Image 1 (cartoon, rainbow, N blue to C red):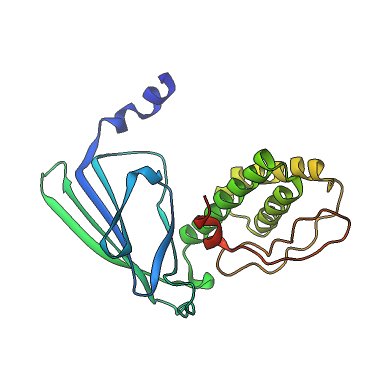
Image 2 (image 1 turned 120 degrees about the vertical axis):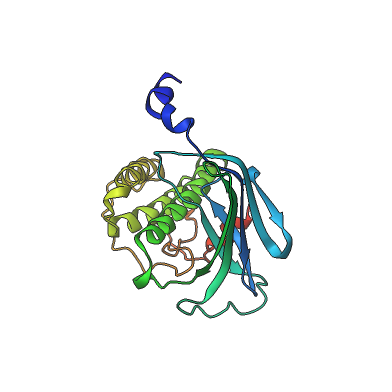
Amino acid sequence: MTKVFREDFDTMVTELAHDLKLEVKPAAGLKIAGVYGIPGKAIEWAPGGAIRLSVETIFLSRKKGAIFVGFGPADRNLPTPKAVADRPLGQVSLAYTEAAAGKPRSSAVDLVYKPGSNASVGLVRGARLVDQATALARAATLHHEQNDQEGAYQLVHALASLYRQDRDPDLAEERTLVFALERSLAKLSGHAGEPTPAAPAVDRVSGLPPAPARRRSPVVTTGPRHDLLDRIDQP
């Protein structure tokens, strides 16, 4: 508490806005498949498959952050809508009362699809952090609850392979964490000392390489992969 008050007290008492309401609505044929950067209990569903976040008071903060939303096909029995550059995936609307002037403000902007070559640094970085959050959550379940060290290693190893290709300096701490977990799980699963193979092609939805099937014998088999949306929908 002392550290927090010493470093952030001035921002904790600087009010920017009141009664903030943020809403994200998916485009036709799509649904919201995941939200990252805010606690799930702070979100509520709104009509049209939208999500809504309400905050009574917004304060200034030195901590950088973002909210990332994942979109997927509304009906998995239908073909996935074709990914076209600048095609709207949804819309985000924002309404609040400015603290200083007491005036209501509102705005809305379309969320459009950007291919990897045209994606902003923040979007690419966010995609990597979402990959990390989902992969490590699943790996933790395999390691602690199912005692599946091979499955946990394969997930973290795939994530580490992505970080070996991504030299974003702002993700240095995340990269160090993932590499350390990879080494620990390599020992537990019997992969310690193996050379690091070239990373296979990544999946266009999740950004992760295809995960091999769990190995129970020296024979390596390849089973169907689970993409990002499957992992999100699982508890």
